[in-house]
Length: 339
Ligand code: SF4
Image 1: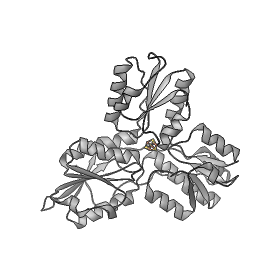
Image 2: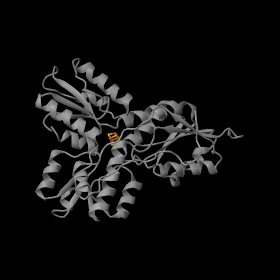
Image 3: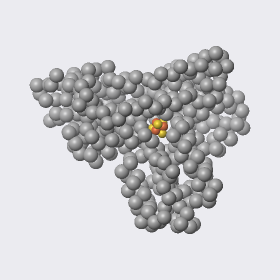
Image 4: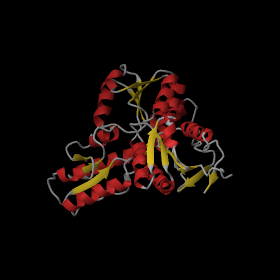
């Protein structure tokens, strides 16, 4: 039903959990159920405060490095992936590892290894210091240079301009990445593309959905944590696509009443590491303020699922506890009209 005030919410779809996050979170939950607490997790399993706090409450212990994990204990590697050096450090401490690296990140690692073996200079477009970039660069440290932004393309030096390839972090802005590639190609005309898209399907789908709704919105709210690359990119994409304002929040309590001044249409989306409960809280907050009409703007349907990490799968199977793993519902519990 249309609101008499015209106030409404456009709710992006797809939004929220991707297949890699779903798998990583379930891996920690299953590990806790099967082995019992504590289960150590190197770095945040996914970049979302709520998820990390929920898993901590169940007995997961988050550490920064493997040397904080007791010798011989069990540790889960996060969805962002780790470098070979981290695997080696874990082996030296006899840690029992469960590798929850997203298979789409692993794919980029393999590209780095392959191009390094062919002695290419590899230009890794991504954010220096991000865990995923550290992990990918660590596969071939002698061949990889990190390119942070389009402007950074000017700083790249290579050994042989005829033998250069670019690869990328999985959670970047598609448009900004292509701008960086264009600038690199101006300098290295034969720059080779990666064999397939490195920016993953989930990142791309969430950006396409927010691009579609943003031109109709005075405000776009992105639910996601500050260290979630794909969530931060969604704010940039919303603004670039025509939203008057866009804010990223971890949860509904961070909403500011003043953001709604003069606003008729609010866009809502969430990053790939955000559980739907946090989006529902934002929708409830908005409904209380007159934005009870919610229209879904769907640009794609996702049904990808990844099986659990092989180490965990094997232990669950040996215990006669093979995991049936339905994908989590990612729909709002409020009434939503498709548009
Ligand atoms: S955002 Fe993409 S690469 Fe990252 S965990 Fe999700 S599916 Fe994997």
